[in-house]
Image 1 (tube, rainbow, N blue to C red):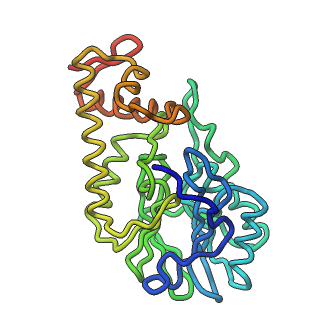
Image 2: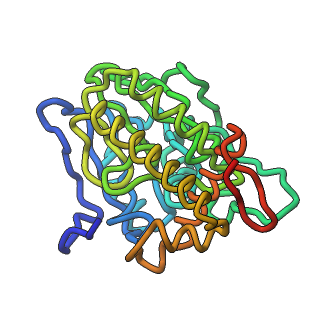
Length: 293
């Protein structure tokens, strides 16, 4: 998706839905990239008495200053991270140091494989004071945020449901500008699809993603995401039957005109599909590539 024209509202307090969700504000971090769109959106939930900060973002001074200005004199009851990619959680520690707030949210991510690792994008310094399990909540003045375990994009990914308004903060599980990257070994396509189905069974009113615009038709949007992933599966299986077995060749056939900076991410998502297809008995490893069964 093409980027919107500049200037982007970096560091500025915005109210995505001032009438439906008066307690929700967002502040855009200055970390735009091919993977983050215009940047990471940090959400503040609460009022002048107490707030929770969702996805504090990168530890950049301008962004931290903007968050502190928006928080004002309110008590920060929680700094909540959906997951620990470096565009989401590194500001948690300095924000906690400046506000005295606890870091409450996703678990730290530990990768134990001895092979080539995929955790370069992970915040290895993330240290939560409390890990939220599925169904556990954070409470403040007039709001309740309930954790929803949604592994797939990462194994530790959480969404947060704002019980009072029917909004769901979806992190990177569902984004408002692009499909989520699912990168093995931590990213898991089977988990991701099950988490999408979990969201489809819910009746959330609106999604507030960490990247991109709010999503006002959640079930329809998730249904289209599931359909898109199933279409990618069918495309991979068809190409395997044609003898296209290597991931780079699959990417070249599947993503015509792709931004060269995103080729690596596309390859990881194709790999995630292939691993899932292998587990389901629909594909098999064949030397350096894969083959149909």
